[in-house]
Amino acid sequence: MKPTQSIWNQVDAAFESFTAGRTWEAREQLQALHAAGWRHAYIDLGLAYTAREQKDFSAALVSADAVLATEPLNVAAMLIKADSLQGLKRPAEAMALYATALKAPAPAEPAATLARDLSRAAKIVREHAQRVADSIDRHLSSAGVLDDAPPRFRQSLAIMRGERRVFVQRPLQYFFPSLPTIEFFDRTQFPWVAELESRAPAIRDEALSVLADRARLQPYVEKDHGPQNAAVDLAGSSRWSAFFLYKSGQLVEDNAQLCPNTMAALAAVPLTRAKGAMPSVLFSVLEPGAHIPPHNGMTNARLICHLPVIAPAGCSLRVGAEERPWRFGETLIFDDSIEHEAWNRGSETRVVLLFDVWRPELSPAEQNAVSEYMHAQLLADSFT
Image (tube, rainbow, N blue to C red):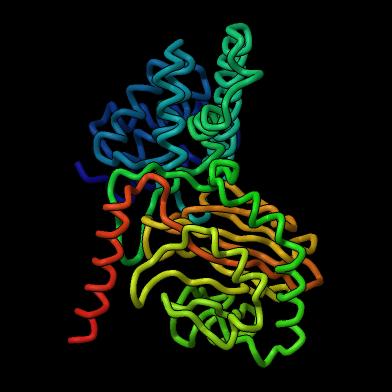
Protein backbone atom coordinates (compact mmCIF):
# COMPACT_ATOMS: atom_id res chain seq x y z
CA MET A 1 0.00 0.00 0.00
CA LYS A 2 1.11 3.53 -0.72
CA PRO A 3 1.43 5.50 2.53
CA THR A 4 -1.19 8.20 3.04
CA GLN A 5 -0.52 11.63 4.52
CA SER A 6 -1.66 10.31 7.88
CA ILE A 7 0.92 7.50 7.65
CA TRP A 8 3.65 9.97 6.71
CA ASN A 9 2.75 12.01 9.76
CA GLN A 10 3.28 8.92 11.90
CA VAL A 11 6.60 8.22 10.19
CA ASP A 12 7.73 11.78 10.84
CA ALA A 13 6.69 11.42 14.47
CA ALA A 14 8.77 8.24 14.74
CA PHE A 15 11.84 9.99 13.35
CA GLU A 16 11.30 12.88 15.77
CA SER A 17 11.27 10.35 18.61
CA PHE A 18 14.47 8.81 17.32
CA THR A 19 16.17 12.21 17.02
CA ALA A 20 15.10 13.03 20.58
CA GLY A 21 16.76 9.84 21.83
CA ARG A 22 13.57 7.84 22.38
CA THR A 23 14.81 4.94 20.28
CA TRP A 24 12.46 2.26 21.66
CA GLU A 25 9.43 4.49 21.10
CA ALA A 26 10.52 5.23 17.51
CA ARG A 27 11.10 1.57 16.74
CA GLU A 28 7.74 0.54 18.12
CA GLN A 29 5.98 3.21 16.04
CA LEU A 30 7.68 2.02 12.85
CA GLN A 31 7.11 -1.67 13.67
CA ALA A 32 3.42 -0.94 14.12
CA LEU A 33 3.29 0.57 10.63
CA HIS A 34 5.05 -2.51 9.24
CA ALA A 35 2.63 -4.82 11.05
CA ALA A 36 -0.25 -2.89 9.46
CA GLY A 37 1.18 -3.64 6.02
CA TRP A 38 2.72 -0.27 5.22
CA ARG A 39 5.93 -0.66 3.19
CA HIS A 40 8.34 2.07 2.06
CA ALA A 41 12.14 2.47 1.93
CA TYR A 42 11.92 5.40 4.35
CA ILE A 43 10.10 3.25 6.93
CA ASP A 44 12.69 0.47 6.48
CA LEU A 45 15.48 3.02 6.88
CA GLY A 46 13.98 4.20 10.15
CA LEU A 47 13.79 0.60 11.37
CA ALA A 48 17.41 0.08 10.34
CA TYR A 49 18.51 3.18 12.27
CA THR A 50 16.63 2.22 15.43
CA ALA A 51 17.74 -1.42 15.34
CA ARG A 52 21.36 -0.38 14.88
CA GLU A 53 21.08 2.04 17.80
CA GLN A 54 19.86 -0.84 19.98
CA LYS A 55 22.68 -3.08 18.67
CA ASP A 56 20.12 -5.48 17.19
CA PHE A 57 22.42 -5.95 14.21
CA SER A 58 20.52 -8.88 12.66
CA ALA A 59 17.32 -6.81 12.46
CA ALA A 60 19.26 -3.74 11.28
CA LEU A 61 20.79 -5.83 8.50
CA VAL A 62 17.37 -7.06 7.34
CA SER A 63 15.95 -3.54 7.25
CA ALA A 64 19.01 -2.08 5.52
CA ASP A 65 18.81 -4.81 2.86
CA ALA A 66 15.12 -3.97 2.35
CA VAL A 67 16.10 -0.36 1.62
CA LEU A 68 18.91 -1.36 -0.72
CA ALA A 69 16.62 -3.71 -2.64
CA THR A 70 14.75 -0.67 -3.99
CA GLU A 71 17.47 2.01 -3.56
CA PRO A 72 20.82 0.28 -4.18
CA LEU A 73 22.78 3.54 -3.89
CA ASN A 74 21.24 4.65 -0.58
CA VAL A 75 24.37 5.66 1.33
CA ALA A 76 22.69 5.71 4.74
CA ALA A 77 21.48 2.11 4.28
CA MET A 78 24.93 1.03 3.09
CA LEU A 79 26.55 2.44 6.22
CA ILE A 80 23.97 0.85 8.53
CA LYS A 81 24.50 -2.48 6.77
CA ALA A 82 28.28 -2.10 7.11
CA ASP A 83 27.89 -1.34 10.83
CA SER A 84 25.63 -4.37 11.18
CA LEU A 85 28.11 -6.65 9.44
CA GLN A 86 30.83 -5.32 11.72
CA GLY A 87 28.63 -6.00 14.75
CA LEU A 88 27.94 -9.54 13.48
CA LYS A 89 31.71 -10.23 13.31
CA ARG A 90 31.90 -10.12 9.50
CA PRO A 91 34.69 -7.49 9.20
CA ALA A 92 35.84 -8.22 5.64
CA GLU A 93 32.33 -7.66 4.25
CA ALA A 94 31.92 -4.59 6.43
CA MET A 95 35.15 -2.96 5.25
CA ALA A 96 34.28 -3.56 1.60
CA LEU A 97 30.87 -1.95 2.12
CA TYR A 98 32.26 1.03 4.05
CA ALA A 99 34.62 1.69 1.13
CA THR A 100 31.76 1.36 -1.38
CA ALA A 101 29.56 3.73 0.60
CA LEU A 102 32.29 6.37 0.76
CA LYS A 103 32.60 6.28 -3.04
CA ALA A 104 28.85 6.42 -3.67
CA PRO A 105 27.14 9.76 -4.44
CA ALA A 106 25.96 11.31 -1.19
CA PRO A 107 23.69 14.35 -0.69
CA ALA A 108 25.50 17.66 -1.06
CA GLU A 109 24.32 18.61 2.43
CA PRO A 110 23.71 15.33 4.30
CA ALA A 111 21.59 15.25 7.44
CA ALA A 112 23.50 15.34 10.72
CA THR A 113 23.20 11.59 11.36
CA LEU A 114 24.42 10.70 7.86
CA ALA A 115 27.25 13.24 8.05
CA ARG A 116 28.43 11.65 11.32
CA ASP A 117 28.18 8.17 9.79
CA LEU A 118 30.21 9.21 6.76
CA SER A 119 32.92 10.76 8.92
CA ARG A 120 33.05 7.69 11.14
CA ALA A 121 33.19 5.34 8.14
CA ALA A 122 36.10 7.29 6.65
CA LYS A 123 37.96 6.98 9.95
CA ILE A 124 37.25 3.24 10.13
CA VAL A 125 38.53 2.71 6.57
CA ARG A 126 41.68 4.79 7.20
CA GLU A 127 42.48 2.96 10.41
CA HIS A 128 41.88 -0.42 8.80
CA ALA A 129 44.15 0.49 5.85
CA GLN A 130 46.86 1.60 8.30
CA ARG A 131 46.61 -1.66 10.26
CA VAL A 132 46.93 -3.65 7.03
CA ALA A 133 49.89 -1.53 5.89
CA ASP A 134 51.64 -1.91 9.26
CA SER A 135 51.13 -5.67 9.17
CA ILE A 136 52.55 -5.89 5.64
CA ASP A 137 55.52 -3.70 6.59
CA ARG A 138 56.29 -5.90 9.59
CA HIS A 139 56.31 -8.97 7.39
CA LEU A 140 58.44 -7.32 4.70
CA SER A 141 60.85 -6.03 7.33
CA SER A 142 61.21 -9.44 8.96
CA ALA A 143 61.81 -10.92 5.50
CA GLY A 144 64.63 -8.43 4.91
CA VAL A 145 62.81 -6.80 1.99
CA LEU A 146 61.68 -3.41 3.24
CA ASP A 147 64.87 -1.64 4.30
CA ASP A 148 66.62 -1.97 0.95
CA ALA A 149 63.52 -2.17 -1.25
CA PRO A 150 64.10 -0.99 -4.84
CA PRO A 151 62.38 2.31 -5.77
CA ARG A 152 59.91 0.64 -8.15
CA PHE A 153 58.79 -1.77 -5.41
CA ARG A 154 58.29 1.15 -3.00
CA GLN A 155 56.20 2.83 -5.69
CA SER A 156 54.08 -0.31 -5.96
CA LEU A 157 53.43 -0.21 -2.21
CA ALA A 158 52.37 3.43 -2.44
CA ILE A 159 50.01 2.60 -5.33
CA MET A 160 48.45 -0.34 -3.48
CA ARG A 161 47.86 1.89 -0.44
CA GLY A 162 46.24 4.62 -2.49
CA GLU A 163 49.07 7.04 -1.74
CA ARG A 164 50.23 7.32 -5.35
CA ARG A 165 48.19 7.71 -8.54
CA VAL A 166 48.85 5.57 -11.58
CA PHE A 167 49.60 7.64 -14.68
CA VAL A 168 49.73 6.23 -18.20
CA GLN A 169 51.21 7.41 -21.47
CA ARG A 170 48.69 9.57 -23.35
CA PRO A 171 50.55 11.21 -26.24
CA LEU A 172 48.54 13.72 -28.22
CA GLN A 173 49.76 12.66 -31.66
CA TYR A 174 51.65 9.37 -31.95
CA PHE A 175 51.70 6.32 -29.67
CA PHE A 176 54.38 3.63 -29.92
CA PRO A 177 53.23 0.40 -28.21
CA SER A 178 54.99 -1.80 -25.65
CA LEU A 179 57.17 0.91 -24.12
CA PRO A 180 57.44 0.85 -20.31
CA THR A 181 55.74 3.64 -18.41
CA ILE A 182 58.59 5.43 -16.64
CA GLU A 183 58.14 8.96 -15.35
CA PHE A 184 61.73 10.05 -14.70
CA PHE A 185 64.65 8.08 -16.15
CA ASP A 186 67.93 7.48 -14.35
CA ARG A 187 70.29 9.91 -16.07
CA THR A 188 73.28 7.67 -15.35
CA GLN A 189 71.87 5.21 -17.90
CA PHE A 190 72.68 7.64 -20.70
CA PRO A 191 76.41 7.72 -21.57
CA TRP A 192 76.33 11.24 -23.04
CA VAL A 193 74.94 12.91 -19.91
CA ALA A 194 78.19 13.27 -17.95
CA GLU A 195 79.95 15.14 -20.76
CA LEU A 196 76.96 17.42 -21.31
CA GLU A 197 76.71 18.24 -17.61
CA SER A 198 80.42 19.07 -17.44
CA ARG A 199 79.71 21.87 -19.90
CA ALA A 200 76.84 23.35 -17.89
CA PRO A 201 78.81 26.46 -16.77
CA ALA A 202 79.62 27.43 -20.38
CA ILE A 203 76.02 26.78 -21.42
CA ARG A 204 74.79 28.92 -18.52
CA ASP A 205 76.98 31.82 -19.67
CA GLU A 206 75.38 31.68 -23.12
CA ALA A 207 71.90 31.51 -21.57
CA LEU A 208 72.66 34.63 -19.53
CA SER A 209 73.82 36.39 -22.68
CA VAL A 210 70.55 35.47 -24.40
CA LEU A 211 68.51 36.71 -21.43
CA ALA A 212 70.29 40.07 -21.58
CA ASP A 213 68.12 40.86 -24.62
CA ARG A 214 64.60 39.58 -23.89
CA ALA A 215 63.49 40.64 -27.37
CA ARG A 216 65.20 37.49 -28.63
CA LEU A 217 62.71 35.32 -26.75
CA GLN A 218 59.31 34.23 -28.01
CA PRO A 219 56.35 32.70 -26.16
CA TYR A 220 56.88 28.98 -25.77
CA VAL A 221 53.21 28.41 -26.56
CA GLU A 222 51.77 30.26 -29.51
CA LYS A 223 48.44 31.96 -29.00
CA ASP A 224 45.49 29.53 -29.05
CA HIS A 225 47.80 26.50 -28.83
CA GLY A 226 49.30 24.33 -26.13
CA PRO A 227 48.50 23.60 -22.48
CA GLN A 228 46.01 25.94 -20.88
CA ASN A 229 43.55 25.95 -18.04
CA ALA A 230 40.99 28.36 -16.68
CA ALA A 231 43.31 29.77 -14.02
CA VAL A 232 46.58 30.04 -15.91
CA ASP A 233 46.78 30.63 -19.64
CA LEU A 234 50.35 30.76 -20.92
CA ALA A 235 49.46 30.83 -24.61
CA GLY A 236 51.15 33.86 -26.10
CA SER A 237 52.58 34.79 -22.70
CA SER A 238 56.13 35.87 -21.92
CA ARG A 239 55.89 34.13 -18.55
CA TRP A 240 56.94 30.94 -20.36
CA SER A 241 59.21 31.80 -23.25
CA ALA A 242 61.82 30.16 -25.45
CA PHE A 243 65.02 30.76 -27.36
CA PHE A 244 65.07 28.09 -30.07
CA LEU A 245 68.25 26.53 -31.42
CA TYR A 246 66.26 23.88 -33.31
CA LYS A 247 62.55 24.32 -33.93
CA SER A 248 60.43 21.54 -35.42
CA GLY A 249 63.54 19.84 -36.71
CA GLN A 250 65.03 22.94 -38.34
CA LEU A 251 68.23 24.63 -37.18
CA VAL A 252 67.65 28.28 -36.21
CA GLU A 253 70.96 29.47 -37.56
CA ASP A 254 71.06 33.01 -36.14
CA ASN A 255 70.32 31.73 -32.66
CA ALA A 256 72.73 28.82 -32.94
CA GLN A 257 75.57 31.19 -33.86
CA LEU A 258 75.05 33.01 -30.57
CA CYS A 259 75.52 29.76 -28.59
CA PRO A 260 78.59 27.95 -29.97
CA ASN A 261 79.41 26.20 -26.68
CA THR A 262 75.87 24.92 -26.33
CA MET A 263 75.82 23.63 -29.90
CA ALA A 264 79.20 21.94 -29.38
CA ALA A 265 77.94 20.27 -26.20
CA LEU A 266 74.91 18.93 -28.06
CA ALA A 267 77.01 17.42 -30.84
CA ALA A 268 77.47 14.20 -28.85
CA VAL A 269 73.80 13.95 -27.85
CA PRO A 270 71.65 11.50 -29.90
CA LEU A 271 68.90 13.99 -30.70
CA THR A 272 65.73 12.78 -32.34
CA ARG A 273 65.50 13.37 -36.08
CA ALA A 274 62.26 13.70 -38.01
CA LYS A 275 62.06 16.17 -40.87
CA GLY A 276 59.77 19.04 -40.02
CA ALA A 277 59.03 17.65 -36.54
CA MET A 278 62.07 16.87 -34.37
CA PRO A 279 64.28 17.78 -32.64
CA SER A 280 63.34 20.80 -30.63
CA VAL A 281 66.27 22.38 -28.80
CA LEU A 282 65.81 25.56 -26.82
CA PHE A 283 66.38 27.51 -23.68
CA SER A 284 63.06 27.24 -21.84
CA VAL A 285 62.52 30.32 -19.66
CA LEU A 286 59.99 30.28 -16.82
CA GLU A 287 59.39 33.53 -14.97
CA PRO A 288 58.76 33.85 -11.20
CA GLY A 289 55.20 32.91 -10.26
CA ALA A 290 54.52 31.07 -13.51
CA HIS A 291 52.75 27.71 -13.52
CA ILE A 292 52.67 25.40 -16.52
CA PRO A 293 49.37 23.51 -16.12
CA PRO A 294 49.07 19.72 -16.48
CA HIS A 295 49.44 18.53 -20.08
CA ASN A 296 50.79 15.70 -22.25
CA GLY A 297 53.37 15.75 -25.03
CA MET A 298 53.06 14.67 -28.63
CA THR A 299 54.65 11.20 -28.61
CA ASN A 300 56.00 8.53 -26.25
CA ALA A 301 58.67 7.54 -28.78
CA ARG A 302 60.98 10.26 -27.46
CA LEU A 303 62.15 11.54 -24.09
CA ILE A 304 62.41 15.17 -23.05
CA CYS A 305 65.65 16.28 -21.39
CA HIS A 306 66.17 19.33 -19.17
CA LEU A 307 69.66 20.56 -18.34
CA PRO A 308 69.05 23.24 -15.69
CA VAL A 309 71.44 26.17 -16.16
CA ILE A 310 69.61 28.72 -13.98
CA ALA A 311 67.80 26.85 -11.23
CA PRO A 312 66.69 29.05 -8.32
CA ALA A 313 64.98 27.62 -5.26
CA GLY A 314 61.26 27.01 -5.51
CA CYS A 315 61.22 25.60 -9.05
CA SER A 316 60.01 22.07 -9.74
CA LEU A 317 58.65 19.66 -12.32
CA ARG A 318 55.99 17.01 -11.76
CA VAL A 319 55.78 14.04 -14.10
CA GLY A 320 52.98 11.63 -13.25
CA ALA A 321 53.01 11.08 -9.49
CA GLU A 322 56.55 12.34 -8.86
CA GLU A 323 57.73 15.92 -8.40
CA ARG A 324 61.41 16.88 -8.59
CA PRO A 325 63.27 20.19 -8.26
CA TRP A 326 65.61 21.45 -10.96
CA ARG A 327 69.22 21.58 -9.79
CA PHE A 328 71.98 23.31 -11.70
CA GLY A 329 73.81 20.94 -14.02
CA GLU A 330 71.71 17.83 -13.13
CA THR A 331 69.80 16.58 -16.16
CA LEU A 332 66.18 15.52 -15.80
CA ILE A 333 65.06 13.00 -18.43
CA PHE A 334 61.36 12.16 -18.59
CA ASP A 335 58.52 10.83 -20.70
CA ASP A 336 56.40 13.86 -21.53
CA SER A 337 53.56 11.72 -22.90
CA ILE A 338 52.73 11.23 -19.20
CA GLU A 339 50.81 14.11 -17.64
CA HIS A 340 53.24 16.71 -16.31
CA GLU A 341 53.30 20.27 -15.01
CA ALA A 342 55.84 22.77 -13.72
CA TRP A 343 56.14 25.68 -11.30
CA ASN A 344 58.42 28.60 -10.63
CA ARG A 345 57.48 29.42 -7.04
CA GLY A 346 60.69 31.36 -6.55
CA SER A 347 61.68 34.97 -7.10
CA GLU A 348 64.13 34.47 -9.98
CA THR A 349 63.89 33.31 -13.59
CA ARG A 350 64.39 29.59 -14.24
CA VAL A 351 66.18 28.47 -17.43
CA VAL A 352 66.72 24.94 -18.71
CA LEU A 353 68.28 23.70 -21.92
CA LEU A 354 65.45 21.56 -23.31
CA PHE A 355 65.94 18.93 -26.02
CA ASP A 356 64.57 15.53 -27.03
CA VAL A 357 66.20 12.14 -27.57
CA TRP A 358 64.89 8.77 -28.72
CA ARG A 359 63.56 6.27 -26.22
CA PRO A 360 66.45 3.87 -25.51
CA GLU A 361 64.16 0.89 -26.15
CA LEU A 362 63.73 1.80 -29.83
CA SER A 363 66.03 0.07 -32.30
CA PRO A 364 67.66 2.11 -35.10
CA ALA A 365 65.14 0.61 -37.53
CA GLU A 366 62.24 1.65 -35.28
CA GLN A 367 63.67 5.15 -34.89
CA ASN A 368 63.90 5.50 -38.66
CA ALA A 369 60.36 4.18 -39.15
CA VAL A 370 58.93 6.62 -36.57
CA SER A 371 60.90 9.47 -38.13
CA GLU A 372 59.51 8.71 -41.58
CA TYR A 373 55.98 8.32 -40.24
CA MET A 374 56.10 11.75 -38.60
CA HIS A 375 57.41 13.31 -41.79
CA ALA A 376 54.69 11.54 -43.80
CA GLN A 377 52.05 12.78 -41.35
CA LEU A 378 53.21 16.38 -41.84
CA LEU A 379 53.03 15.95 -45.60
CA ALA A 380 49.56 14.47 -45.36
CA ASP A 381 48.39 17.31 -43.11
CA SER A 382 49.58 19.83 -45.70
CA PHE A 383 47.16 18.34 -48.26
CA THR A 384 44.08 19.08 -46.13
